[in-house]
Image 1 (cartoon, rainbow, N blue to C red):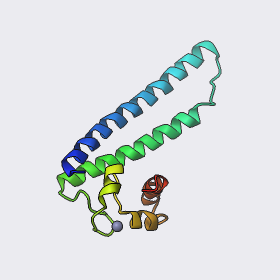
Image 2: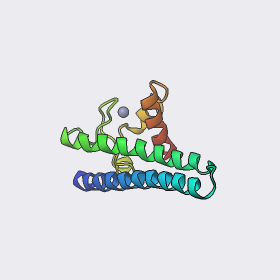
Image 3: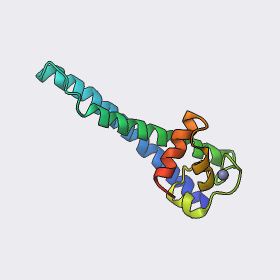
Image 4: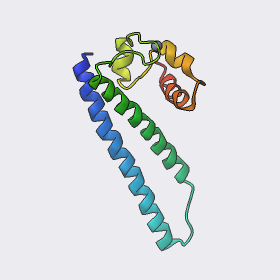
Length: 126
Ligand SMILES: [Zn+2]
């Protein structure tokens, strides 16, 4: 896919993720207000799920913003670890991918940030 299209995809993805995070935060507030009103005690059962979704969206948003920054720096499409071009199929499926596949598999464990980012990318197995 052309990089210009990927840039547009990333911007759409960024907006979508920001909205999703806002929505989850709103849900949290509503649920809190709701449970105070009706039950006195809070039902925690869905909080972990919501929290997980929010954290995942936040992590992806960070990767997306980093990728948009790489467009500005004219470094988009290159692995941030080894500097080799990331293959087209991977970029098309994961425009926010910071690593080539080889590095995404290797980097895990070096630091928490890289670990969670690469873990997320490996999960998609592209
Ligand atoms: Zn690499």
